[in-house]
Image (cartoon, rainbow, N blue to C red):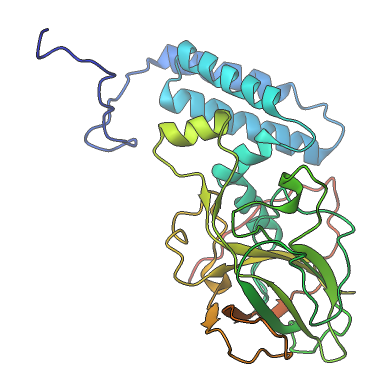
Length: 335
């Protein structure tokens, strides 16, 4: 055997960007640039008759960015075909219970960016994060102090806090939806036995306070047996999500908040596969030794348990935007 022969694919060059010394610059003639620009303008003009200004804006902006990408990287036909195959496979694997295109949006950060755009910073309002695919309508109601675990395995965890508006006023009766995976990293809907566990809804009391028993969150992988998983593997990324507990909180006159809390010290906080972690949402889950009295007197026998506090601040309800309006962000710069 020739000891210098390659037995696998050649190593990839380091990632470069326009202007980097290692970048290969492709010379494009003035005539070639003119042809590419003419095609772009032709496609943009095809959307001039859109049914609303907003639809026209969306389609023309998408077209500009898509053509810009193709022209910047000088996309090859083989790469274009590979992209079409990838999207086709994403469609084939999508079902009523699995949405591969949402998964793709998640791992590209598009889901979190959309959430950021639609949940603008407002005072000390709690930050939002991804909704995730495992929310279920009509989760059982529990009273304050009840248990959402429903027999799911994991370390018991006492969760408590308050719900207030941006002016600091308590929001009695705020609805709090909570859901989470068990210690094995599975949500109840991922089992085929119809169980309901690790989810419930409750209401804040007359002081805006809430409390319940759940489970200390555990990490788990997003579905990675399809095209999105293969893409993550190809680029050296993990499918793992940082440990978290989901919340959806609503109250009259307030913007509905969808968020998580994350476990302080989790090594995945900086590697969350869907970019959902915000520093403000990282909380200390304090383990209590077996035999430590619980806040409500619950007898946990010889099991240890944890506790965490999460105070929630809701932003005021957004004003409805004209669905036909053009929306353009203008960055505020220091004078």
